[in-house]
Length: 337
Image (cartoon, rainbow, N blue to C red; front, side, top):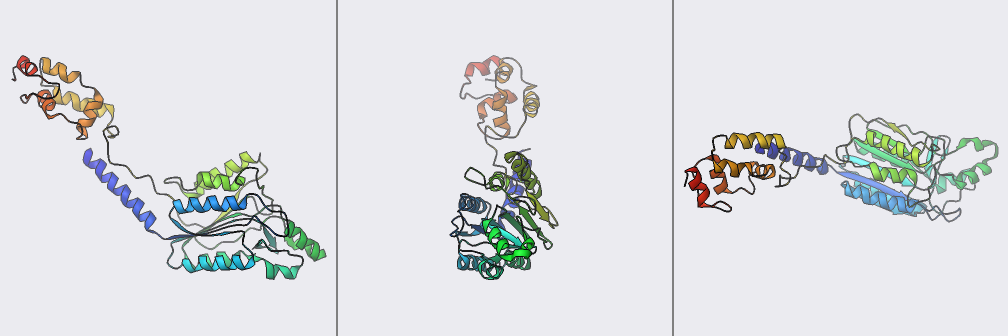
């Protein structure tokens, strides 16, 4: 049993080392301090907390907070440069976003969007990031907490007059290539809540559930959805599109630590059976002394720890030597001394 436990420990350690040997790269952007519309309280917090979470999961993280147009483009470029040789890429965005004609855009903090022409010069298409990810890596994860009620979209729609219907609420459904998963804070075309705490309901749920040991990400997103529903009293339903072709586990199963005196993995039944088999041929006071030993002590002996060789000899009936808590009189009483 001891050898089996050691083999299992080595196997799990190899699994963990293999998981973290893959190259993971993430882009995290949080825009709160908008210059021409009211600020958003949470995105900067959301991005900072998500970046810390992803670093803990083995990602190299490129972070941008309160980015203007030039800052958004520069940060995306830094991210794309790091994708070379990556096995997994992740994009997280919190802030204002909008959809126009079915295309989703990131709104930098200096955007005004007073006309349709401004859209091309002041916003950044999200497909610019998604296409770069899908060209480079085999597993791509996208989390968009950008479906908030957006006054920039209102400005744009007002300027477009009869064409304002092309400016949709929230974000549009995004088609994804093979090996990609895209998760939205709420269903396409709906508005997500910013929340009253440090994080939005969607991001708070992501922080709780992403990276549970051995858990596939699709199962984690179901837990996220349940949390968002509960937090918003059913007003918001997180949504995802997936073309993943296998399980994606962000944190490998927790590796088994070497057995200790308190955690040998040996059950009471196994310890007791071994105990009785060991002392079955011992008679007299020596048997009484062995019966007085607690099962926990026998667990230690089976694990090779805390063993008293003198007491073992006494209980095995193989002769006797004086040892700790074991006097010569005990041996003489059994005829072993």
